Image 1: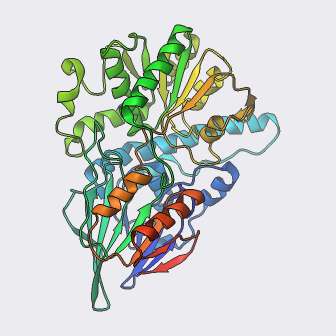
Image 2: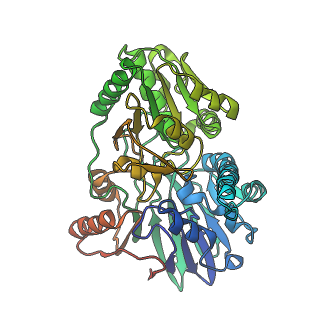
Image 3: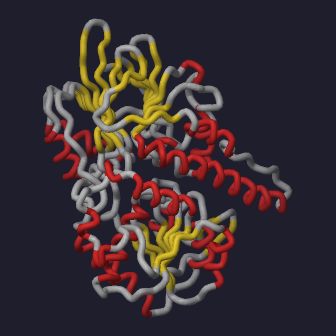
Length: 463
């Protein structure tokens, strides 16, 4: 079996791995590159293999850095895309939303370019492309095996990263031998109030593991909750707005939960809170639809026995006109909007309108890849280009990695320790170069008999 690393190799985005086995080609993930804009645009415009030769696709979860390029693939691929039931439902809204955002952003930027007598830009894919792709999604339950190509049985096991996220277990029979290859997908931290913990995997022969925070240790949650209360409270007292860039799936639901608990505990006043993202609205409905990925006790922990993702002072906004009206309101408020890396969607409009006011707070609660607008903001760069125009950053900027859905250094070590089997080969992926190289050293110390590999873009590794 050969694995071609066409993304998330010494970087965190663009997850894409083409597996050659038994004369078949199985694509694992098909994600967008996000980050250095010109470089990402070039990488996203092409698929580095013949899409017509792909026999099947397997997807670990719905985040766009893992699934966002599927509509491009499906322009020339008509086969199945295997995923969990919750991932199918989330992709059904996320890929359509991605197409809509790309169409709208391309239109907006093209208008600006027209004023400078520059040619228009085209979206990577369109809504009809995404609609075709969604029709090809095939759902499977956790722990129920299926065979996407000859000689390979796949089983999804809960990864605890976002709703529907899965570790992908590949039981391979090739040339008279059998082995188990485990692709971790993105691994959750465990102990999450909303999601179940990652479930350990047994009898692993080779391991392909994410490394997003492999050289860092997250802050503890209770301290972070208090810090969020302090930061938000201070901003509200000075009549400012709190802008929270957040991924529509996962982090939005979690920060709503935290703000709800802080308000119920009397640590925050009941000011207006807006979740300004059509995708977040639909994603929250899907969270309520899939209890198999949520902790059974979640509702028992909620104050006042209210909806986990709703409260009296919380408003979900879908309509673009209602979104624009937020810019005309000057009272203290919290605005949660996508995307978490500030690479698209309504968050860039809210930043453009609020980042220049020193009374305001921009609070990051998730990972921002190198080269993204979010990464530039957290790095303290000013002025910044938003929609091609410069903006001075005067608002207070705070970044917390505590709410990340990715396991940190210690949590990844604990995850590997729970795996059983004679792991002969470990492949470190999905991390910036400093993180993935550090992870490799940690794993070499933990597993001295295992060969540890850190592949580069387009490298081929044989299992």
